[in-house]
Length: 274
Image 1 (cartoon, rainbow, N blue to C red):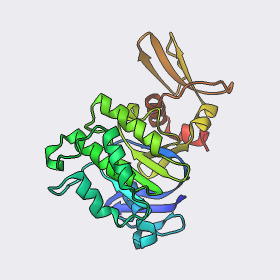
Image 2 (cartoon, helix red, strand yellow):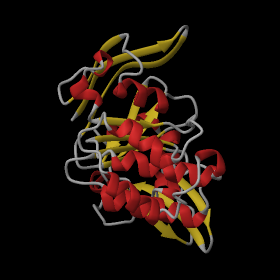
Image 3 (spheres, rainbow, N blue to C red):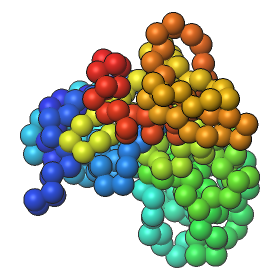
Image 4 (cartoon, rainbow, N blue to C red):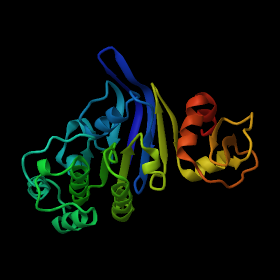
């Protein structure tokens, strides 16, 4: 489990986090959402030990990431949005780093490359941006770490590749693994992520499963804009209205509408979900 308690972090004079606390439990694929600049990438770096808290604590299975202990490092992998790769093939790249990860599976890497439709014979600099991202995803998943952190993984992928991304993530996530996906492209991962974490400047507005969200919030699809909705948006054929679920009715979560509702009603929905 990842535990973050009373965390403060700033870059020089820019405060990013102030006294935030949250947890990420094993066996889930988390969606980490927030507007530009709220610290999604910074949070992933803090969890990986690439940044150090200025106050408070971050622990992963009881270990402190910033201490960079071998027992910690062999169980986490962070795939940033942009990766500078050597003039080599993905196969040679993963063989070079795979020795540091006890559960690394080269056969799985080959299987993933085929499923993601990446040419095994090409070097990184011969691959398109999207193909390179899929190759790096194959590398990351083949390490079989307990914790995998993906920063904007679907940026640059075409529509078929996004479908393949969702397929392999769903297929290779286990009950013992935790994946955190930081993204602006919520539609790319809408049927993949659960729970959802929504960050704001100096705050965590939501950390909830779909079941918890549906229990408190109702997504009404109808012909009219409802005035008492947290958020309403015109769709083809009508409107989606995000409402308090006073009658505890079942509905389907629309993540984009949820995010917009939270941004327009920060304190109200934050208190509602406590």
